[in-house]
Amino acid sequence: MKTYVTTPIYYPNDVPHIGTAYPTVAADVIARWSRLGGRETFFLTGTDEHGKKIENAALNRGLTPQQLVDELSTAFVSSFRELDVAYDRFIRTTDEDHVRLVQEILLRCRERGDIYKGVYEGLYCVECEAYYSAEDLENGCCSLHIKPVELLREDSYYFRLSNYREWLLQYYEEHPNFILPQSRHKEVVRFVSAGLDDLCISRSSFKWGIPFPFDTDHITYVWFDALLNYITGIGFLDQPTQFEEFWPEVTHIIGKDILRFHGVIWPAILKSAGIPPPKRIFAHGFWMINGHKFSKSLGNSILPNYLISRYGLDPLRYYLFRECPFGEDGNFSEANLVRRNNNELAKGLGNLVQRVITMIVKYREGIVPVSGIGEEPELEIEKAADSVVIEVSAALANLALNKALEAVWGYVTRLNIYANTRQPWILAKHEDSASLDTTLAHLAEGLRFLSTLISPFMPASGAAIAVRVGLEDVPQIGDLIWGGSLTGKRVEGGPALFKMLDAPVEYGSELLSFESTQLVEPANISQEMANRM
Ligand code: MSP
Image (tube, rainbow, N blue to C red; front, side, top):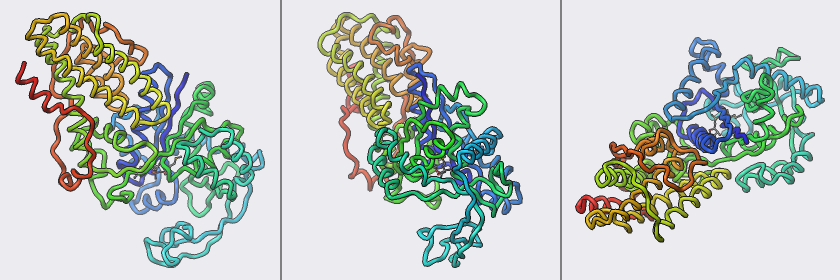
């Protein structure tokens, strides 16, 4: 089985912020989980580099558009490196193979009779040198220059999107999981049912784009160019075998704002070019700050590099998918990030790892002991380990990233409770050697499972847990069969996996609205343990 997962390609004239990190890290989680399951995986991300805005910005800076995008796209590459995103290809729409591909598909669609020349008429701001729709305007003026727009006309090529309305509606009906979540599927069906206009796919008023192969006065207008990245990236032109194998398995992760382009225009273009539609499209919600989509004026708080340097990468990656259901909008709050870090990561998982390793070092000279036959509490821990693997697999197959993390933290809590029930420090005092061995072996084995389960979300912490329990690598999902694979391994101590973080300035005001978690109070546990050991 194969996995192919994509993110939107980003406009490089904006800085990479938390909204662009979100789909990219989500795709990274899916790709990492797929690789851990032994599936061949291809993960594509990149930048969407053509268009009037880039051409103007380059002009203003005395650069060619190509020089400008070469410079800007590196910000995305380095942001994704800082986010520990392991993509297989970073595509740029200025890549040579993509330019060739767009021209090839334009030819195919024309042959099919789906491209014709018409006249584009629109409301044009001379200052911006851009068309606006009536909804973008304020009292008939462009909101940037506060000047009235003009009605302009230019020759343009059109794609016969309207021809595909019936086919699309039938396709949606036959493939109810094509667009997810379900509410988005319904939204698209409603939109298409209301009727489709043909799509303008060329411009002649500026030059920064892919030239039409059959009319070089025209360049390809942005969406026709951008959407095709998904088939360039997997080798439609140059690696047809790879394309054949991966394309049927593709999942496009996108934001809800670009759903119509993906759910309507994209399958129609593919159909016209004789290529099957993608397998599924998942539209996530928006991160907001105080109920507003964020803008640059909010400053640092939305920049991944600021958040990483202040709070750490893994806490950020965890927060993004634990805080709000993937598919819905969420309110980004540094206070809640800190709170979750402190309660769920530092005191929950981090403390569990720390005390298990400390006890194995203290009572068994750092070697994982052989487990005896367990009783009820051990059987529960073993059964719960099997269930959590199944739950996480099911949740991630449906892109319910928050559900996967909820299941994993349920298991963290169980292991903490198990340690409290068995009280290894008392067993050690009473020299109940067999029970102590069984308890410590079960706790270590639980950590082995957790290493795999958290690693798609928090790769560094997953790898660190593997090392702590004496393994070289994070176990594959197929290795998560409860047993004695750690017996005789030497555990490794180390600093706390997660630091307790100081509250940000806004913390106090948000404390009240934060729901308390179900975790055992590990702060007390460790204090209690410290007293007893
Ligand atoms: N270039 C197009 C996509 C072409 S895909 C063939 C584009 N680029 S974008 O840079 O403006 O946005 C990229 C993605 O970032 C979109 O999916 C958008 O939803 C996402 N986000 C931008 N701001 C966001 C939030 N505040 N929250 C979550 N995601 C957001 O559109």
